[in-house]
Image (cartoon, rainbow, N blue to C red; front, top):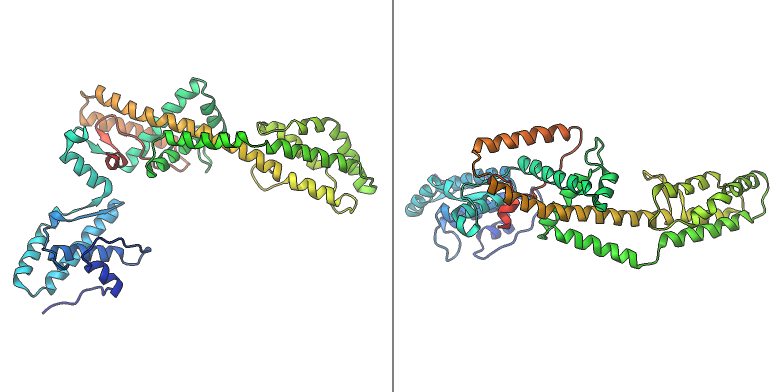
Length: 403
């Protein structure tokens, strides 16, 4: 007696299973994508598609992003195949399906990087790889990437590279706060560049192009500072009495020294130079007085207390922050561009010099790095970055896909 399928598909899902053409299916989480893909694989094995001969499991490839998803996919295909056997009434086709069930392990149901690794092992000469290479898992890859990034950044800081010095000064190498460190920023950029299919040099080109665009435009910080000086000059000429008049007198005393400092502000101003604005705001009269309301509100449009870490906001601070961020992007991009090539060159050299190492030596080396990285990263998040090849016959999943 035949059994009914455990899950009933909608008409749209059934069309995705049975249409004998190449398909792209876009669907959200929990919509049944795994079920549809599993049933399409079984339909291919059974020869259910129009004009399609039955396939052997070895002719099937189903790729996923994670090991867990690959395991789930393999289990679901096996379950759907068992259901299909129970429903099959044709003796010849049933025999084929039973044989397929026994050889389902030959189907290439795996992650993308595992599939690519298998192709590379089958073609080691064309790939230029030792066929005995191993694919770095996510943890090993992240540790190796952090080690390479650290070595390059330390080297560039020691060489007085301006970009590396600025990046490390701003974000440090290690930090116990949730904020990204210099190493994490570099790793994230390299991962994003690789995800988009670009070489590390693309990061440098992109950030430098933006930096040149900012350099070519008018200095908005200097322009805002000039407007601020004009407004405060106007404010101090406004006749006022009471508390407003007292505040203006105090502001006038401060302004004798502060005016030239505000006028000197430009896009390259250091944070300590911008501190003068905080002092001025502390002496600013309230906008409640009609005599000064318009001018004080105009000043607050340029600079006012804010909720950011720096504690200031307004047009001047916004422009200044954008220029500083652009400089930081160039610093990070320059460092990231240096890590990428160094990463690959180091990997090749290390492999050539490590031919005498045993597999246990390699594992001990990685275990040592893992313990070190674990201690250094305690208390902060660790970003996974598959950005490098292992020097000892290990390559990352992304490297498999790239090849």
